[in-house]
Image (cartoon, rainbow, N blue to C red; front, side, top):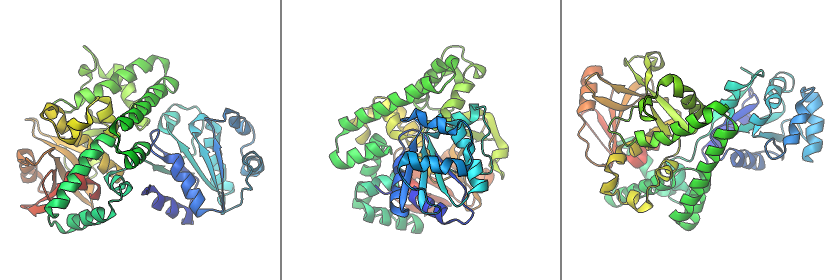
Length: 431
């Protein structure tokens, strides 16, 4: 399956200022597969080390962690001759060995000619809570996410459709109706399947939604295990409660996260560590309200007002135990959840494209789902789950802030009118 991360990895390999690479992200998003495939296609050989499946590996890093000491030992353990510039060295599940992370500093300073890439599922958590010296400024860091809508369509051999979508997005011209309907159907399939590579691969092979749901449930079980393994004992129950409650809050008309909805009388002080753990693990993303539409947006965020979205919309549907048919046919029974589900999907696509997302709200409740910076301009993004595109809040925002243009995502075809760029939901990956 084609992954966009490969282009970044090739750029990293050829960069004369390359540093050891940290590839971080939630479990099961394809970090290990991508690095191994990258090594197989772009290097003469690969030396692979997994600190989770081989715990004894950590003892190699107990003493001297200079490259001169480590390289001969690692060559022996892997059965691969590690050659400068020609071998990709991979440390997997590196959060299990703090000293291996520290060693990256010395590879950067003393032996930059070795190509070192490390992957970790809970690196954000490990680094935030560790007692060791993180190699700040001595590593390149890249976050990997689940497959986006474009990668999903490519996995289903829809390359021609992807090209047509990109053309229509660029020119604001409508897709032929038959292709628009096909793409909308694929969007609804993506809502059910999501972007976890194993789920996408199985779907491409079988189209069996029951099998996909089983796979998703196994991934969710893995997340729960991580909450127990890699969390403070006092925080485990709070983290699980918070995670379970996110899907409930996305069903509310106002999707702003409220601690009091986790349990009666809940306060921020009690649950903010749980929210932080989930964000650092990559399982969820937290987006803040901006109080003023000014650059840089980060300076104007309200730290007490935020929303939380799940990293993968397929896992969101699995966690809600939604029937595939209800999502595929947008059953009326899902009316309370359609808006939150579409928002979650759009936030994922924007995040996968490298956007830092915010939202905007007035004291009277007018709201814009997402505020992003695009080509130097601050652009509002409004999301509708169907083709009803009445947008009082967007009109108010445009009158107040006079953006260069606005983006409306919905089930409607491409177009541009009165400063609003209409984009079908399936084309969110183009933004």
